[in-house]
Image (cartoon, rainbow, N blue to C red):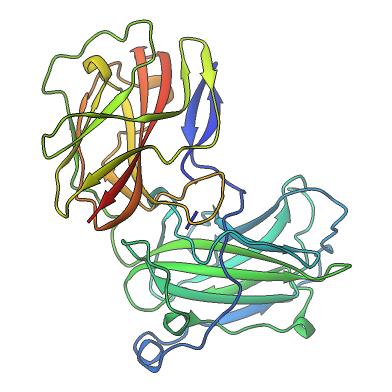
Length: 367
């Protein structure tokens, strides 16, 4: 698993948003489905769409490729850009892992067996025809709250379209027919010279189930302190034990900024079912927050991939952020595993005047 938060500049102040268009890896090898999984769920179907307008994938054009998911039925189209995985560009493999699960906020509500459409475009060519797709493979696996990679035999395959079926402008497939939270992997192949190009992208589908709501809470049991001049830190406690200060990540504060790849964070050991609590430095209250859980990276990669929210966040309205809402965050239960917890806070002097944003990291081992 590999992205926590990127940076978006708004009103002279940076606000953290999920990265898009960056690679995070996954293996291209596929396996045959187990008889049980195949008979229970039934293989979703894939249908190529051969249309008249597409353009070849040119390796000489140094532009990112966007693989986007669209609704293909009668409901209004809602476009999702997936979580990119392994790429093979002109025969050169860029590998960073085996399987990826997009963040909860990127989950896509779906009806059972709803038809979706995927196409590919260069980042700087929104008005141009889509790229010509030569091959496609689509697999589905249940979402794993433990961030476990599925076994090849447990993947639910869709039809593989061979190179002789090439020059497709898009490919259609059906969501799994069984309700649940699913991860769908799409591998598109492009004809390029000197070698082939493949692009792997992951999507998270909520098939006939509601969006999960974490059991954590955000409160202000002690009076909110004024922000002060210095950027506030954050601390975590396990079952009421002494507080452990976070390692800081990207931030802005009163006109200053710092950016960089997110760290693993300060080491924290916790038992199963331990109660984890985060507090802000000096009891300063945040107006907005996002507290997320991500697996520790197994490859050298610049972003994290949060898979679970540990506290319900507020509505992210940059120009209506309350100056003071919470300074204590009681987290949902963290399952057994090797994790990174990130807390991102937004602070405001008034509802229309931001002070800054901070991110804080802990490397939490639950055993």
